[in-house]
Image (cartoon, rainbow, N blue to C red):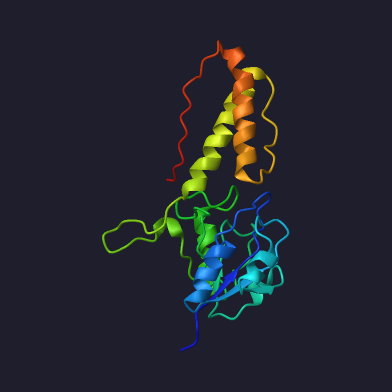
Length: 209
C-alpha cells in the first residue's frame, strides 16, 4: 500500500505567516510513515530548511496545483479569490478559512467558494467541522492562539489609553515569544498612568460561528 502523501502549500493570504505543520509535527508524521512535501514559502514562520532537516521534501511554491490527485493538500487559510475551479489535486485541504460559517472571504460567499471544490472534484476537510462519533470536535485552537490574541488585546488597550485618537499601528513580528511578552508588559506599564494606575477589564474571546 502506498504511503499517504501530505503536501503543505505556501499560504497566499497577505501577512499570513502561520503554518498548519511545524517541523516537529512533520517529523512525527514522517516517523509513522507519511510522506511530507513542503512548498518553499517566503512568508512562513518556519524556514524550508527546518522542514528539510527533519526529512521532509521541499517542493516549489505553488506546486500544489499540479500535484497528483491522490496527494492531500494541507493549508491554513482561504485560497485566492477568483472564479476559477480548484484542481482535483485539492482533495483534502484541512483549513481554517471558515467557508461553511459563511465567512470564507469578503467577496467570495461560502456557496461560491465551496462550489469551486465541487467543480474540481475535490473534497474540503475544514477542521472546525471534523468531529468524532459523539460529535465532539477533534481539533481546536491551540495554546498560542490565545497567547497571541491576549497579547494583541493588551497592546491595543495600552495604545488606546495613551493615544485614544490615534489608530493602532501594525503590530510587528515577534520572535521569540518572550519579546512579545516584554513589549506587552512595557506597553501596559506606560499606559497605567493614563488610566489612574488601574487596569480596565480586558475580555478576550476567540470564537467561530
